[in-house]
Image 1 (cartoon, helix red, strand yellow):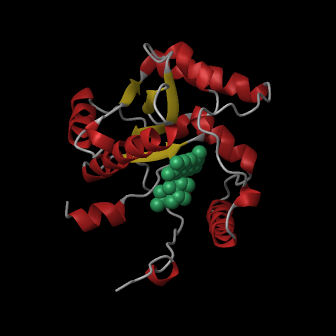
Image 2 (cartoon, rainbow, N blue to C red):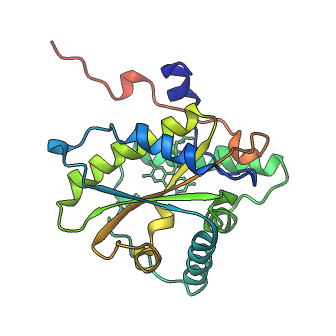
Length: 222
Ligand SMILES: Cc1cc2nc3c(=O)[nH]c(=O)nc-3n(C[C@H](O)[C@H](O)[C@H](O)COP(=O)(O)O)c2cc1C
């Protein structure tokens, strides 16, 4: 695919077919993605490819934590919505509204509980990629480097007709992940990415998304 078509064609995929993803294809994606830049070429990231029984174990443990109403214990704490600039909050609200309107028009549940339930099921994806970095590293740049790898993964997957959705929700109980993922005891969890073949008809994958025009965030200085 043309580079611009991949960048513009990628979208977060939140409904998948049940078709498996061949391991070879996942390897190809990761092999391309590893050429991401990183601070001083440290490449201090780790990736776990979670499928089959391990994925089912993770989903069951995640759902049980949700049912117990366990507090978010993310390794990288987010920013409370109240602290966001007004334009950012407005975009997040817009996303929720557009998504809900499309789901409601298709007769599907659109509330936060339904969203969380779908997410706890990894949107039906057959693969979950979990991204972390060594806990001894300063988190800001280690997370920044890892995000470069993640973006490459998402673009490489799109180029092969596969769908992805990044999720910080799925890493909100990092203790669960550290129990399931070998060698993750000393890792901080950044994000999990669902991977699979997109169900292109699903309303969850068809709602409109927008981006701010350049003039809203670019300042030319000469
Ligand atoms: C760090 C990060 C965390 C995200 N977490 C979630 C999530 O928990 N649930 C979800 O449905 N989407 C999540 N997303 C996807 C964003 O909502 C999505 O990227 C954004 O709305 C733009 O839409 P697009 O990816 O389709 O272009 C996340 C994206 C990023 C980059």
